[in-house]
Length: 511
Image 1 (cartoon, one colour):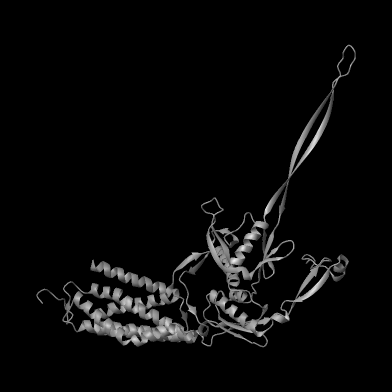
Image 2 (cartoon, one colour):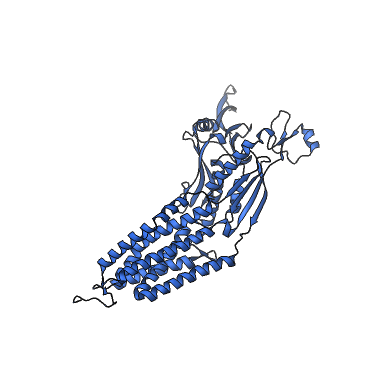
């Protein structure tokens, strides 16, 4: 039974180590893809993106007919053709002079920061030139950086307008919350209908009342017209009678027909003056929520992820308010890290070399017990690296130092535990439990100031300090849990039922 436990623990540690250092690869579309989540690097290691947002000084061209209504399909007409039709052209600046002020510049910066937080970008820097209105943003470089850039530069103007008159019926002020939702396609009769992605817009009290009124007004209605047609047929029947009298029978018939005419009053939904959809309502909406489908239901993972990404982009923009000023992305530059990959590799090799040397010392000093605990040490280091991946801890230069500190602390803990076991005359279950408790007490009392400082660091809004704090926090938690379970089990399994004496020989009942 002891051998089975020992083999199980060893195999589990080997598996975790393989996953942490080499990953898990599966075939996807004729290529092998690592399914283990990658680390999230800070800008000092991965590089970053510098974005400059400038106030849009261009104008919007609006064409109107003789009655002053906007004409949307005359953009290709020349000035002469517009004059012939009686159309006029107006040039309206996207940003009027009254919105270009310091208050709106600062408000725009705050909205951009909200969008970055909603997109999960913790490591960013924003600055605003309160004179020109230019906004400078620096974000880490990763796979979704381009999508983030497009989101922070979007104005986010939301409107529901009358499709015919272009009257604005609802806007951003009516929105309370926007969420991305997905689930099984309820319209499909097949069990393999796929997953549908949609945006749920929840309106505030005033918006709910407006939506109720709009959905009861803009409905598809049927008008029925009945037409009666009278057909008169003269059927003349000649009958040879004695007095040669002709009898005529008049037959009259009526035909009735029904014509149904469908009339639809529609609304158009726009984001940044671009039409998203035009529709009418089947029934009155009283819940105050509106759902917009993104794409169609699908079972393809990559397509589904694309729909979710599109929906998330729209939701983030609408949920955090529209920019009071229209901006354009003037600069979008990639900034290389000051630390090269070769320099980073040297640091990693040094850490690995020091750990290997320390474990060799442990094995030489404590023999078999040292080998068992060295193996457990490798398992803790591997599990620690996986935890850093899946808790989204940002890896920076400071956090690499934190990883090294955690490895040193765990080495001190293991060394202290083995020292207590080595001086015992008889090492059995009771002795192991006692030694473990004493080690825990001494170790954590001594590092209590470090624990307090680490918790404080986690809440500091400066990435170098917060990343170090998060690495240390998860490391200390792991030292406490891992050694009370895995290390404890390995030490117990290693010992025989009779225990061992201080000379390392098997303890018998006579002893």
